[in-house]
Amino acid sequence: MLITVAACIGSTGLGYADYRPLRNFDYFGLGVAWLVFVANLIRDQRSVSA
Image (tube, rainbow, N blue to C red; front, top):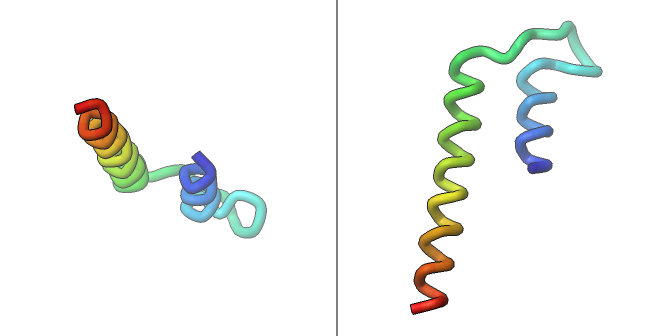
């Protein structure tokens, strides 16, 4: 979660530069990162319970 907040602040320049709205590739990159994270959690959970 903290990495997502840091990525959003870094991408938008919020607080330290002129504000830029999130762009499509920002959404795509964050979405892919979260999907991989969730997939790894599910895979690890299945390997522990097996």
